[in-house]
Amino acid sequence: MGEEPYYIDGIAKFIENSVLSEEEKGFNQMVLYGRDVSIDDIVSSSKRYPMMADKQVVIVKEAQDLSRTIENLVSYVENPQPTTVLVICYKYKTLDKRKKLAKAINKAGVLFESKKLYENQVPDWIRRVLAGRGFTITPKASQMLVEFLGNDLSKVNNELEKLQLILQPGAQITPQDIEENIGISKDFNNFELQNAIGEKDIKKAFVIIQYFSQNPKNHPLVMTVALLYSFFSKLMKYHALSNKSEAPKALGVNPYFIKDYELAARNYSMKKVSAIIASIREIDMKSKGVGAANLSQGDLLKELIVKIFN
Image (tube, rainbow, N blue to C red; front, side, top):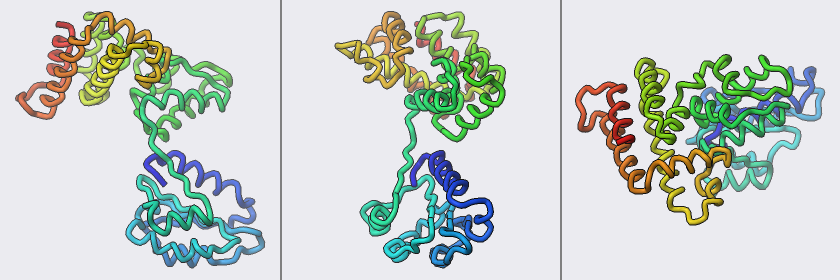
């Protein structure tokens, strides 16, 4: 159960592929969908005996569609069929751990909660996943993936699998590989805009936002505003730290990127950072139609950049 479907799908797939042999699956493996069945259907299927095998596997996908009646599984879970492996995939929601079903599952089986990763945790997840597959990735390349795909692990994993098919085993994935094979520009993205602003490179920042203005669908303003708000909020925390060696943990960023915050802190005082955060909030409100009439995404971006650099 849980907000992150990647692990729920992964566990279900592993059980689907591993418990029974191909010969046994025909009679002893069943995949049900929550929207098409009732709790009684699941219990009835689970109480069947396996045919010419030691176990049968019943997998209920999209079980969150049964959220109103899911507690009715309690009686079966309290007395399960020992020859049945029953897998309940309860995505985007969690069972109430105070109720009987969660307690019964914990006692009779395994209750796994798949929690959503924060975006600042995803680069390390990418690194670990790739290491397990014999690849490495540069910090900038992993940051590009996160900036483009967010914390949707299924989408990130799909792109990683594409790269693995294209690149040689043991290769290091670079921004160039990301640009050529996934279509994310290594020069025109929010990460590069953040760097240009941190470095006070006005020319580079305006070139990037001009590109964004010409490609608004691929670079929505809401994403740019969210990233810049996150960056300057962390920069405010960095200013407030008495012990800068604690910055990676306090800010929740890869130590590789701390140098970006060191440089930005020299370029923007705490007072200026506070004013910039206020400007970002103002632009966010204008982008939602509050206090601005018919301003384009490009105009709002230019206004924000001017306020940041002034």
